[in-house]
Every structure is written in structure tokens, then in C-alpha cells.
Image (cartoon, rainbow, N blue to C red; front, side):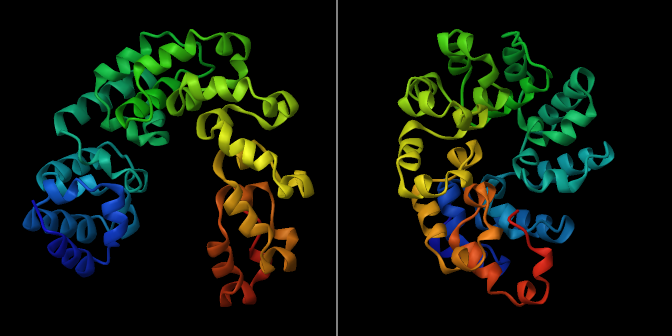
Length: 298
């Protein structure tokens, strides 16, 4: 166990945002130890040069055994897995070394090493979970979809019962093109049913893709499609916007001075993946003023 004050002290010393850490995983206060956290951070910072923002996204690594972390890293380096494939999913280094090695060999043999490079999080998943997904015999265009679902199960965005329910549903049978491994890994049949039975879907089926089903819900979609912003600028709204944004963020962007001054820089992708604070910082920067030609909506 570690006190808030002790953890704040560590965060200050290592340039880590305490609030981000606690929001991402409050368990660190119960499971962390001052000395062990410092040992892990010394290794991540000095040996691997991991950015604080990536540590903030995966606080659980701070209460793992530093020797396991080092052993896992050495193994992955030996197998030519690049550190930049690991740094954004540090939970992989938190795995039990024997489990990680078994999963690596299993995925390499059955899916190829490129699959690991494209979905490094799979190395944190036990073979039993992956086999339970394989037993569903889902007809993917690419069997790597099994890996996406297994990762979703490991990290709690779905479970095997949810996946079975979706696959046996009338919605899946009627619209198989709307269901990808992303949908199966991040949604459930109740959310999907509400979306596909909605007036919004019936009126605008072109705005709904597997990404929308995976990452949105009918309440958010309804707010967006009934808004004045959508009615005024329908060209700025795609399935990506419905999946990854909400009406408050969209409203702030479209009512901003930045949008009025540079409408050519704003597309559906901007609305989906940014917010007004980030945009404002960029457009008021010396970098933008010096090189505006380097800045696009993306």
C-alpha cells in the first residue's frame, strides 16, 4: 500500500500526472509499494525511455515485479519485437514471463509474427482465452479477428457470453457486413439492438458501420443527428463522427473562432478525434504560424 502523498511525490519526481494515474487505475494506492514503484519507473525511464503519458495509460505496471518486466522486455527484444510496439501497451510487460512466452509461440505459429507486431496486446492474453474464441469458429475474412476479440475479453470490453449472444442474434444474421472483430470486441447485443432498431438507423443507414456499433450508443447518436450542427453541416458527419465524438465536443468546435477562421481545416475526422482545446493550442502555436502548409484536418 502507498499513500496519496507518497504517490504524488513519486509522480512529481518522474514527471507523471498523478490525476491521470489515479483515474486510470485507483488500485495503485492499495497495491503499490513506494520502493517497488520507483524501481519500475527507473527501469522504464532509464532503460526503455518510456514516455510518462504511456505510463499514465497503464498504471498497473507500477505494481508489477520489475524483474518480470525486464525478463519480458529482454525476451521480446530477442524476438525482434520493436519497443515502439510495446510502449503504448505496457500491460504486455506486466505479464507472467512464462505465459507471455507461451502466447508468443502460439500466436507466431498459428497467426504469424506480423500479427503480433500489429496487435502486441495479444501477448498479455492467456492461450485459454484465445482458444475459447477460436472455438466459436467465426467466419472472418482474416482470422486475426480472433486476436482482437481475445484482447477485448482479457481487458474487459467484452466476454465470451457477449460474443456468443451477438453471433446468434437476428441482427447478426440480417446484417453480417456490420459486424467485425472490432464490433464483437467492444459492444454487446443490447446496444447493437437499440441502434439497429432505431429511427436514426432507418433514416441514415449510410452513417452506420461496424465502428459505430462498436464505439457508440443510441443516445449519443440521437443527440448528434437531431442537433442543429448536423442539420447545418451534414457533410461533416460520418460513421467515425458518430462513433468517436459527442454533441458537446462537436458544438464547441463548430461554434469556435478557429472553425470560423479556418473551415477548410475541419472535416468529419477532426470532429471525431479532436477537441477545441487541442485545436486551439495548435492553431495559436508558433509552429502553425511558421508552417501552415504542414497542417491539415488530420
